[in-house]
Length: 542
Image (cartoon, rainbow, N blue to C red):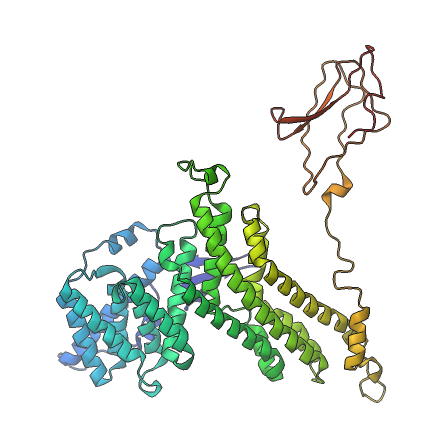
């Protein structure tokens, strides 16, 4: 068993299982002190009296520690009764938050990093649970606290430590709806961090914290919650996020070619860790697809579209899925183009660990949007709820381009696989040159390749058929019923064995298209007009 300090989780494992557990208790004292930036060793005062500043510092450390305990409790156990009690406490009064801001301002002037970190943790609790900006005075204090946070966030690197920057981002994310009460304000903030994040480490970290938080909220409200619209960003912001994801994916793939051997091994040991932008896109995609495929029909909706199995909610979701899928497939085309370029460059290079890099390239690709977004999207598009003509017409050009890129890259990798298997060493230690291919020869090899799908067995359950057999001979008043499932079959062909026959004119074989005898009757065989059984009546079937 071990303790995960980052997520406040307990991990246990044995030869048979591995489990993750929430930590229901408080964190150990030294972990709390580490987050606050204070020493966990408590020294006894040498004299009976201590200075006022020391008393204030100790009280603030205690307040910070209690706030950390409360944040951990509420984050770990969101459904416990105590959570609802804490969350419904009366909001603090404005002058209390004003006093907190006064302490923060003085700590910033004095450069007291420990007090700054304590107050930042207090801000997270106050914003998250206990403050409601109803009055004008409250809004003024909120603006003041927001300015203090941004002053810390945008401070030069040499004046702010990464730990404080992280706590500032957590505080802004916790108070996102209070600091930015309107949808326009939040959208402007997100546009700022998405467009300027690459040039500023503070904005980049704030972007990651906000998107991670939104992704978690979206995952927790997956099935049609009223709050899901709040966590789903508009198309413009999604476009910015997608551009970042495409750029990250291309950089990750390019590293397989450009970094040193040691750095490449480190890269393989860190993937597939998804970035915050990619995590958010995954959450949005899963949210839309889950609701479309698993949504229950509205019993109160008696419109024509509802009678056809399509509610207004499903129609809205399909529009959103189409818009998102169009952007994702376009981004995947760019990443696949980069993958093809890197694969070609590696194959044509003389680098020593070329084989390892090509094998590692597949592993790294799984950590990009090609591995995290594309398989889920393509699989879900085959669901009957999404098999519409509008969707097919809109996505067909991009899917064709996608097939082209994937086929070319797969063929490129497949034609080079035998090269590694045949490379040998001559007695003098030099590589055998007979299996080195020049570009012209490689092109020839590609033309002669029968295709990367050659030898792939496509399942065809309808080809084998199903045998239905009763006991021999049948007794009087014998009844037999069996349901046969043949996935993918478009028509039914019955073939009777030459040995089977009916015995009396009331012996019948009836075929129903459905789960029971109340379903539609397809055909009826057996019986005759001469009073005795006959093979000829059964014939060869239909």
